[in-house]
Length: 399
Ligand code: SF4
Ligand code: SF4
Image 1 (tube, rainbow, N blue to C red):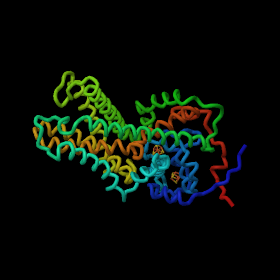
Image 2 (cartoon, rainbow, N blue to C red; image 1 turned 120 degrees about the vertical axis):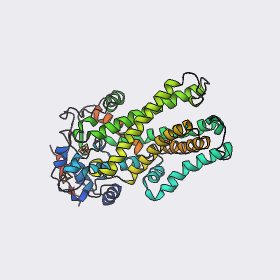
Image 3 (cartoon, rainbow, N blue to C red; image 1 turned 45 degrees about the vertical axis):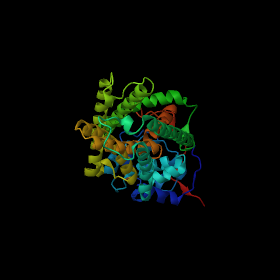
């Protein structure tokens, strides 16, 4: 039986969405081509048509508690086929950005990272921290020691303290933000929950089984180069994280020499690090080139996208260049690039919960939430997920 629904439009929210990247949302005339075109939208309550009308009507509560925007992989088939040029793929991206900003803890960092006018301040914080670190370690002396010894250039203990504290802050902040988002998902009253969902842990494991091989991403067949690029970047990044963890364990716990000094057993670590770095950089290069050359397929890029790509590309490139210039024998060049690399790594860690990097966590939570209530992307007719209020598709204005 239909339930009465009274729409409470938040027009400022619609303006915020337009500013965040959904510039053409008002062109939509609800033909539903986009939902039909999307290869991964389920039959029940498909996206992105419903998000378009929620955005036009300023239904903030619905969009801010919508798990579906994270099921979208931005293939842009829907935007390409939209007869009105409303770019539904970009609207979903704008909503995802607002999820990250609205759930951020502390909230001012969410606002800082998303604001182009604050770019210099955003970048300035980690840059100044690393400059102070270098100044107090060696007074900006890039000419030695030779041969290269990063631990003598900046003491490892100083790096461990600053980067470990930053990482702990980022993880705690991200967990708080994701918990807020998880709690909000249950308040989306378009999604009827029949019976109790599964617990978080089994749902989380199911979600990982889908995310690690990018199973659903592969369904976006019309734009599968994006799937390949994302897979390379994703596994390259995991390889680099594993490499960093092994190196830190060897130095801190086993007190072995770092790989840069050719300590015992470092060849496999170097191979893992180098192969991961190549996968990471190649995947990123494909993404950037596509954004610049085929924006209709890759989606129109916002400052939020470019900030993330700038930081992640900077991290990967400075890491690779540091290694290359060290092989070339330039001591000052190696230390200088190492310092720049440290700046990028600190930026990445510090803003992890507030930049597009947080999509790893939000997408996982949204998929896990869907799994817990039977919204299975590979079986679109899942019985536990259905619009609770058909009248919500035709909202009536309050008053
Ligand atoms: S976004 Fe475009 S394709 Fe989708 S319902 Fe609106 S007009 Fe139709
Ligand atoms: S961008 Fe691709 S995955 Fe996202 S809604 Fe459009 S068609 Fe579906």
